[in-house]
Image (cartoon, rainbow, N blue to C red; front, side, top):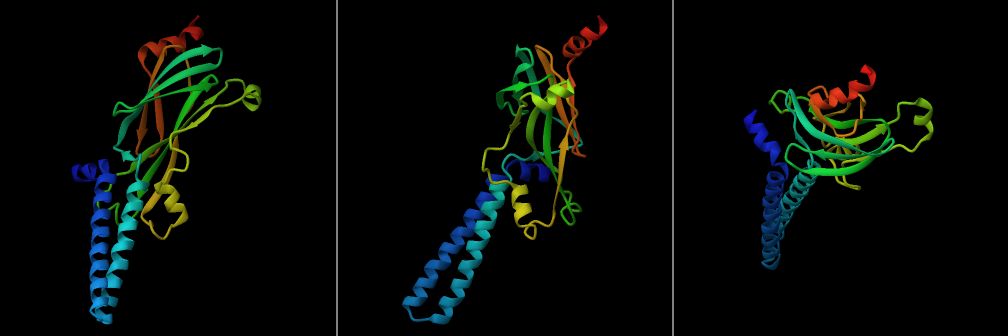
Length: 230
């Protein structure tokens, strides 16, 4: 598991390095092909040309795989994936601060009475599963909800995606070219909506099944229970 963890935590570095080596190999084959052509050795030049195509194709494939894995993280049995701090701006309008385990943060505004975080979990089919490849995950979006169903149907809702617009993604590659990645099996996970409260602090955890579990800390839970308790 440690070997897989190291591999997956630095997917872009590893795959881009391999892509660079493959493209360097292709460049060397190009130089050799041109030399053979100058020496009027068409058969040798044709062989180098085939190797050039192989190196170029492999380099582009590795480059695409590295870019597609951006944003994915290793998923253990259950792990915290996000901290959420809420502050009320006005009735049913909230400022949220999202903090990732690596310290990265994002601020956003959300409408409604409750919030939910959704994620994409990538699982592996055989033979990668037998090799011990652990699942990966990427947080997909956060959205709000109103408690009143009538208001939910008419009032403006908030849905904020985490992936940059137009970003190259592993699942997009899987949908477009399924024959390239037959080992990938995607699971879209989401958690239940959790009520928002001013100065609330929540921890969002993700299970291997793809289920997201959001938990308020003790002080937040007391604030949420106070109106019900009188």
